[in-house]
Length: 273
Image (cartoon, rainbow, N blue to C red; front, top):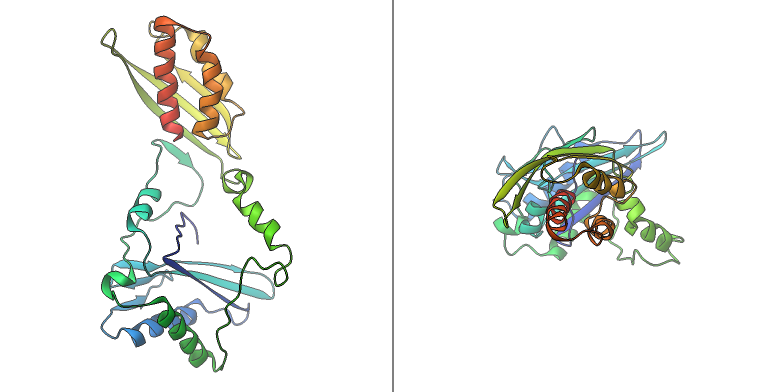
């Protein structure tokens, strides 16, 4: 897998655990596609060579990720049942222009929900169909078991792991190194004067590792743009933390300098998000 992953409560998560020798993603996806077509025979649902599942040959309803160790493997896939399409579209759109990174890029795909094509399809019947199809494919007679994933007695240490996955250090601190290079358009409405500033920012482990602001000297004295850059280095790549850092500098200025520093800082913060 790779790229961006979106999830909400309308997106079903499936994980197939197996020995490495028995690892077979296409067979697993066959369980999903045949369960769906068994419930809704009129739906055109097929797995692809990229291990996605498509509706009508073009709309993605499932993506895949997997992991193999020496003896065991797991294949994880999703199923868009009734996810929020507005949130999905918004969150998968890059918020900052000019980002450069070695991270695996997302391949944009048109998506759809199962309920857009089968409005009556309920969670319960979908889950039961998956269980029955899994049993049929692998020659089993297992029943579904409802568990509480936060139950410490069943999963010792799960609370600690959940807290780690919710932390800033995991969510943002594990972000691959990236840089942003862009032009900032500034307008001093008091004097009807426009200026373009160049921003180069490098981010490592979620922290600003380097920041360089180039602004025309007749717009802002060089020492002030340098101060803005310096105060951001070491801060989290987060608009709230960055805003708190530059606010200290803004308090030291007044009049035109304060106004223009404020414009520049707002432009930088808009890039951060």
